[in-house]
Length: 321
Image (cartoon, rainbow, N blue to C red; front, top):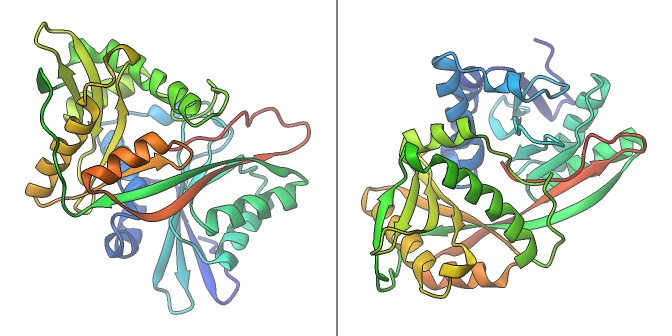
């Protein structure tokens, strides 16, 4: 394997999840909250590969998905990045990365003819990667969505509203898929942005069914049987479970459902010995206030960047993973 290096850092590329997890284990385990997105997405991909499910073939991306381990001059893993997002512009997602390594990754991708349409993750490395990519491709960074990663080491669970918390079943799949879509649209509205249907995580009925079978999607059911809320709580990766998405339709808001469900799932996770984290949109003061009141504390600011190149129409928006 040809490993790009500048003497200070080496980039080790992988096109399969399991070898990457073996190589990146040191850096993912060292900061499992920071690495929760890369770890959880890659472990889910590894489970798909193990059962012969080729979901990437359905994406139609003009490149093969990849993962990268950044090593220092001594060979120690110091960062990790992946490009596995199934939605345009297929942004990468990075853990904290030295600026020199980010520029080196931009150069390596450019030299092999791959346009990186977006770069998400920890700052400042993700922004350096996006801006270096834009400079090499003659483009510009045209979008910047600010996010924040939070962790709860303790939690204050508010009083329970009327109803009950239950796991979603396969019979709920259509509703869960519709609420995933509504969550991303309304998140833009609440943050004061024009909703972009091309942005954000794109889900299918198959991907929703995978999550339901994993037992990570929870619903709040009112006493009359009406389903009024959705919260996800991911399988632990390196001991970390990530909450999200969190969605309550407008007609059921103001009852304290979201606060209770997130608090209760956080409590269960902590009691099981897991570290609990979640992301917020920094432009949405409501969600930031709610999670702070539950006991979540900010750990790092991240951002989503989109690279626009003249004549290229394949990168309509950004999005998380």
